[in-house]
Amino acid sequence: MKNKYNEKQIVNLMQSLDISRNDAIEILQADAEIDKGAKLFELTPEQKAVEKKMRKTVKIVAPNGKKAQRELKIDDNREKLLTSIIELFNEKFSIENIERPPRTTNKIRFQFFGDTFSVTIAKERKKK
Image (cartoon, rainbow, N blue to C red):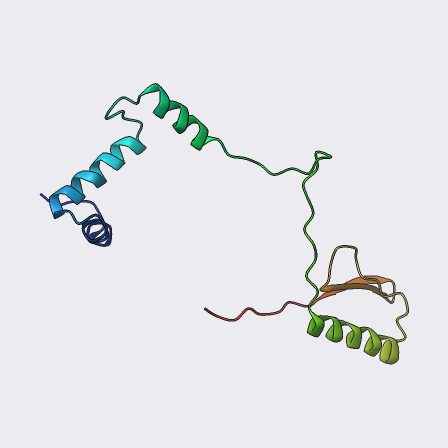
């Protein structure tokens, strides 16, 4: 019989639970049936209460009922770069009305010959 389970899953179960290959496959089959909604065994009332409690997800909401806003992280290098860009635009193009939208640390918006433009600075993350 060809099994439909990933070999890594089987080996992981065998090593972590110290069980045989057949036992690992039985566990994976039982998990698949439970995922489809099958009840392989009955739970006691206490276990049902714990299961119900564990299934509930909690959404963190501020006391005023609105989603809590997190604090902006200020990157010194990004600030220096944006300040330099603003100074350059002022010197080279005489753009005076450069604004930084609220709650952003990486964006500037300005008007140039009647058109509105925005510049966004994105810092590339280091590969893990």
